[in-house]
Image 1: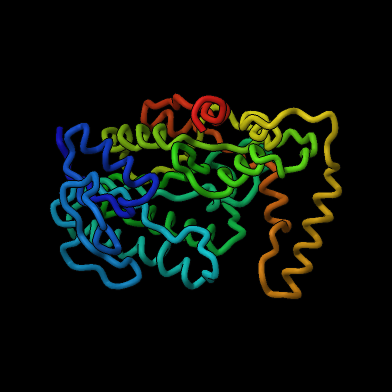
Image 2: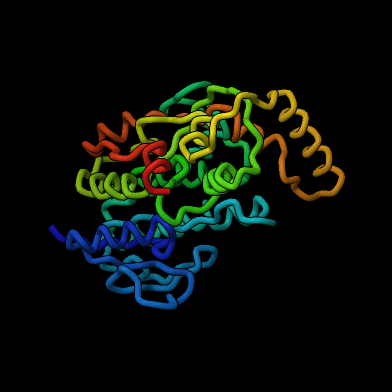
Length: 310
């Protein structure tokens, strides 16, 4: 059955792929954009909205489903107020508009950062959420707003692991590039576990959730089935194995130095404690809840993607 789906952030890395998949299966896509598109996109119509301001009364008119991807993500120079305005208050505005329009399904694209920066091994949705950054706190606040929006019958908070795929950006791409260009020194032999999700697997999960329409509000972590250690990521990216490793204490010392310099200069250092944790500690999330809700399973693993496609 064809549906009318409103997609915020429709012009982004995930949004464009989701819109295209919706169109391919016969759904009518309404793109919610902050500025007019420079070229036609994979949507049927588009509407303008700034989530930091009051939304037009009819912004969600005719939509039965809302997929809310638009967010402020790790923006340089952004403070807590900016994340709060876009990620939390913006979500509240869209929830209100969706409820007024009679939308019956709302999928919120959150982040594992809402739970925290690292995990004690691999965890699921029951792990206490303790976000450590303004971004993470804004995403958790938005999740709670979604949970409280009882006028919308079906609501899902999706905690995304870092998303990879063709034309990906972010810290994973930087790590892979550093490994392939040869300027990343041999890493310590750590066995941490970090979760990721391929963009195509994320899209198929979303399509399945739209069809399943679970009643009430659900929380689901989104990840593939094979978390990788940082050394394993580097190896899959094609970096030759080394007969020696830099000691972990040296990286820890470098992180402390970066923190000190940042405290003096007021500017983030190239390497600090947060980057140390991202490289060498766990951030691992189980996808069992999503499997049960959507009848879904991922096709990709990051290791396969790096060896075959990236």
